[in-house]
Image 1: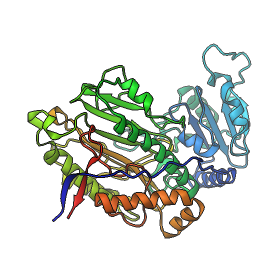
Image 2 (image 1 turned 45 degrees about the vertical axis):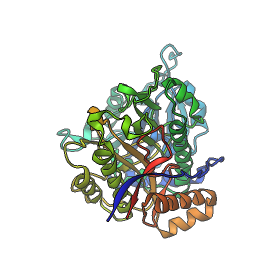
Image 3 (image 1 turned 90 degrees about the horizontal axis):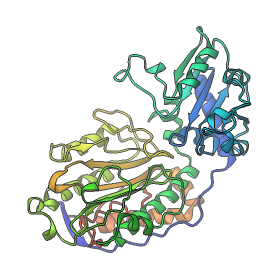
Image 4 (image 1 turned 180 degrees about the horizontal axis):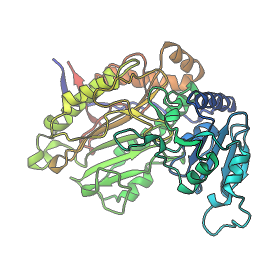
Amino acid sequence: MTRIKLVDLELPDFGVPREQPELPRSLYDLRLQAFSSAVEKAGLNAAVIYADREHSANFCYLTGFDPRFEESLLIVAKGMRPVILTGPENHSAALDAAIDAEAILYPPFGLLGQDRSKTRPLREILRESGLGNGMRIGVIGWKYYGAAETENPETCIEAPAFVVDVLRLVAGDVGAVVNAGRLMMDCTKGLRAFNEIEQLAFFEFSAAHASEAVKRAIFGLRPGQTEFELAAAIGLNGQPHCCHTMLASGERAGGLKSPSGKIIRRGDRFSVAIGYWGSLTCRAGWVIEEASELAAEASDYIDKLAAPYFACAVEWYETIGIGVTGGAIDALVQRRLGSPFFNLLLNPGHLIHLDEWLNSPVYPGSNERLASGQAVQCDIIPAVGGAYFTTNIEDGVALLDERGRQEFAERYPSAWDRIEARRAFMADTLGVRLKPEVLPFSNIPAYLPPFLLSPHRALVRTS
């Protein structure tokens, strides 16, 4: 009989990589070729990718840089050299892009107050870039839409009106400007749903550092600190974030809150999340040492919430794999945690990339199958509230077939050693037995200490 128990254990030091894996320019050339082919197969004559500071993953995937402060456009038209439009502060990055592209300064993408007196008409720039009357032009922002959301999903575009309006003028009445986000973000066909070995190694680097920061937050947590003081002590290393740093205590805990000057007190609720490109690690629990410190109405916190949650997470980890449908993942979570008490939020799993949430194949009845090369986030979030607060494990894994695993191990042996050590810890200590293709990237994989002042006591599965 399987049981979930709270036991004393030693969380291994898996180590953190010092050198960040690089993505060679040749990889970006291959991506651009694949993108151009996808654009043509979709019946489009050209594509325009919009980016800003918050929404840059699709643009960065092809160009190798993310615009800072400003907006940018990448224009890819058949038979033409790609064009990158930026404001003045990103122009040098565009000149050094990872693809062969013409960099054009477009002052309106700059900040207010900067010189815009020499702005060329956007219509003129777009036409010189290969766009013209009668074309079918795809626009890629950061989402796409379905029939449940709007009567015309194809024309629902999340890019600035002044850009889309001019694109429609250029295409004319016989052309069309349409949302082409699926080319990048569809779970089964989108280019970014599948990662090269180099990209996965990059994500492992990110995940190792992000999870170590969360580990330092847990092991460094002390009543009397302010949230700011704890956040300063967890040692962020300056990598670009896929989401803002989250750390909160007491009534502030949970949700998406940034650190504040609040003093962390014994008995508080607590939550922390750190995400770098390709990774996110989150944990939530109590600033106490043992269950006797819980409020009387939540004295059964372990039996009622934490243990069933951990049992579900174990099954999630042991079920996920190549060829598994998102519907199967959703069904197992609903079977275990589908009662109103757990009040699950969001999809219990999603694809992760440079952005924290690329898309999710995990939803009721989904026939979308997980595949080799995908990076997947465990994301089972019970919004229980009340005296029970919540519990949480959020970490990322990659899926790689046998050939992919062999290549990863040969090219990135140190990363592979960390992955193997994490798998062994999950199996031998936590009782979580992964399929061969499931590669944990977090340095606190499936580790769940409910009482954070006793970080060496965590939940395990025994039989």
